Length: 184
Picture 1 (tube, one colour):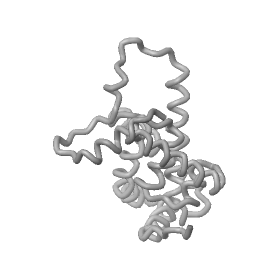
Picture 2: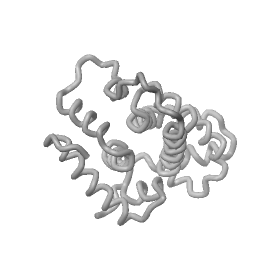
Picture 3: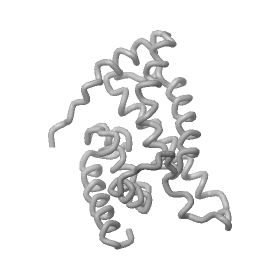
Picture 4: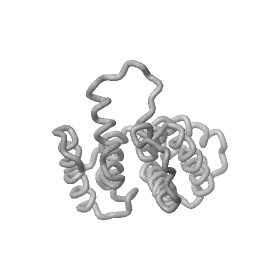
């Protein structure tokens, strides 16, 4: 599979370099550019918009603190989603280590959305993604919804490209199964 070049890579690279040089306005531009994709990714991993918002705040804080250590600014997008992935996984570890709350209805934790008008297909895909294990949901979200290339997903998840391919294959099969009424 050929790499899908992202058209905005050079802009991100220039902005990241400007951030490293101490230009605060450049970081504001990066936040505006990547706020939407990060919020969608975080909400899909966290399970709700509110939890996603908290997660995004942590992601940006870590990005601000770490931008000076970014060695290859042309890989800004993969670096940023790598931070997002690690931050989300840290949150999930803490969540699963905490004792469960007995009065929580799992159906209420599914995707919250403010828009009234949503297509049935989009709703089914979101519900299908919500039913998937985190690893499969994560790889599908990064590759299809965030449009990261295989090598970028590999860098974010810190696994070989072949592992990304096999996870995508498994995730697609599991998602297909949720549409056919099977449970993952």
